[in-house]
Image 1 (cartoon, rainbow, N blue to C red):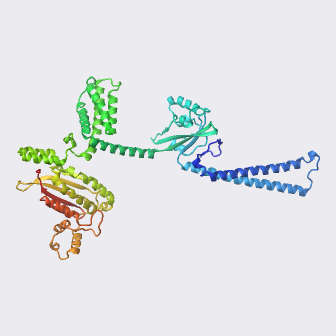
Image 2 (image 1 turned 60 degrees about the vertical axis):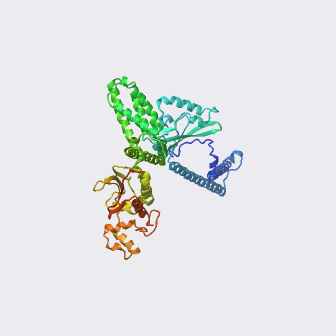
Image 3 (image 1 turned 90 degrees about the vertical axis):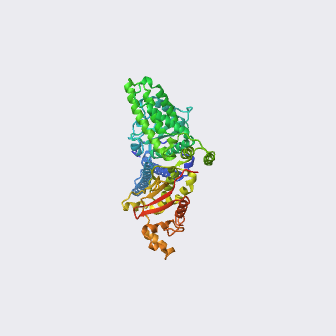
Length: 577
């Protein structure tokens, strides 16, 4: 507190019932100090009475005290009494001072701004130090409207509500009235300072002072906003997936606006453009695309403004707004591509059909003498899916496993021509590739501190390249899938060590490093000494090889110690059912 010796009016401000038990010790101590003060007053009164009697004896015809012994006794008793009373008052003063300092420390340690004011609006001399930071100034002696920076146009209403607030027995309750007073302080650093008002009554129904409590809720508000953004993001994803066709139609209309506004558009000919803009505002906000929606809204307001005086000015505003809309649209598209695929726009509107029905229809066409070209076209563009879509779940799995192991990893980098594949044919093999992803995290990517020591980026990079390659004679096509990482690589010495434990006299002794690391595809082989949730049983990589070979393909691993590992998979490429 400031000015601890200032005059402070004490009213009948009763603490809440929940706080009564907590305040019991404080109330008991206060009662004890009051008893000491009362005792001091009684003692002082007794001393004064004794002195008055001694002085008044001659007045009433009695002999004054002339005996030196009696005078000495009176003097000693009086001085002793005065000394004892001084000691009591000194003790009370010290305790009260300690309590005042403790109260000051407690109030200031809360980090809140406390001040009080009366009907005249002038702030009292007592306030907490936090007022200087939260309310950006010392409030003592200032009008509360100046402290709270009430704008000029709102001061009349503020005074009216203050009159109502201090009016005895008014119809509205205290908390009903203070709702019309400022609830936030306009801090110059854009901090969120909330304002609360509490009453101090002199007697029931008669308000004497108002206590203002200022609290910095910037961090709490930021956390709430972040939670809301995450909720909106989740809602956006759900709506996009649930109403995919409508979302694509919305994106198409945004592109239409960008196309139609890309050129000279006089104001007199912009009515259809403004109608489209108005429709877009509601459409994009439906999908919680708030930034894009606000950009569209501001552009519409700017274009409809009466301050635009010429076609040149109108077109300049339109051009600037168009660039902002395009920028926000690109941000949305970058996000959506990661959610529903890179070529979602190419697919256009979609309707759900059972996969089995798609394949059954291909078989029906095959036995109905339908042209082979028609069947191939149907399989390629209707049934097949881009292979990158088949790998999409690996991104999430890679991030989840990195969090579990405490490692860092970047999003998967996809390259290649992204050929279409028949999921029914490839499903088992692609599903088995999850073992490759798990081994990359468990065995390949090093901890961040190790990568930094080796001069690498702390986050590992995994890449998947998919393409269709022909045979040397060009008669047959192969689907090539290369999964690579920039991790620690496979140590051939470690592989030989584990092989020695299981087959001391095996053929592996005559193998070179490249050939020996191919043993990771053997049943039961693992370089792990213990079994974990991720690896160690020696069955995952064997399962991958088995699925690849079931399709008539091959898998081979290449590795360079401390630089990375590469899995090269080749399976026959066909779009036949």
